[in-house]
Image 1 (cartoon, rainbow, N blue to C red):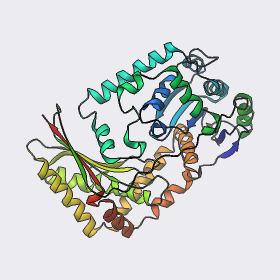
Image 2: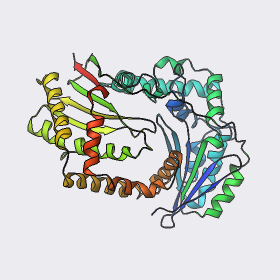
Image 3: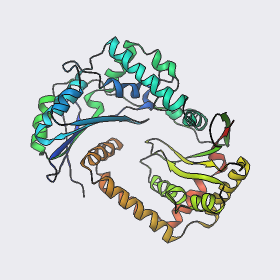
Image 4: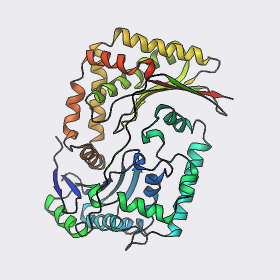
Length: 411
């Protein structure tokens, strides 16, 4: 059981405190309720650009990293389609440094042409290196556009196209900051060798004076139900042909999400999974194959992807994959198979919770989903999934009309 206390400042900032006296460290985690799904279709990549801009200095602190390093701390951040998370870990006795740093950049970034030009260049290079010039780098650009017609999951966190970031003006950037990076759009989680009283005092001192800002009201277009299979073929200079298939699944807060998550492990969770055993080890059609999902807040995608063995045709590989799925839909799984993936999930969750930094991030993420105590309830939800539910969901999810296929062919 992971214990925490929660309070809310008058400016809307949600604060969660998790005391852990077994460590000399403390973690200060600031989660902003903004991701790539909150961008304009013609101005994408902004949430990710801000992940970089937030380290470019704030109104009273020219270089973010310096004071933190002096205090013996480390920091990082990540952006997804749903959220942006900043975290720093440092010796607990120096925790006030983290409060000072995080509150100052929430108060105001040091907006300047130089900082924007620098970070814009960094992001542009990242896009070229990891998505444009890398083999299979554009897979998710193409797959998202294929699978989503309406919802802003149509584009990746890095952005839809390079020009959106290249053309971003200082005014665009300021508007995005003051819309999303406000106390009432943020969750502050403090974990480690701290007390609730100490955190209350520091939060009042550093965050309470910041104006709440206008609460961003999310009103995103809903993705309509897919009613016909879609496919696209790509030819590129890659070493092996690859097959990608995606099916729409449930949002992160839907109870059926847990069943879908377990299905991905049954099909593609490592060397003992069904697809690996049948298509890699026995039939030797794929050199590797995996099944996973995005864990998206809104309706996500369950994905199977595999690289074909040289000489195997796409038709042969796809037919064998479809046969495995039909077999699953016809006969379901055994109780032992389900127990195995539940045990794996349990040990993975326990391992993740060992680190105070992970606990802080998880508490914040669950609070964003609507209930921080989900951190203590999720395992029960996985344990409650039945063999019958797995069979039922396999029949619903793996409907041909719900399928998006990307054939990635080597030139």
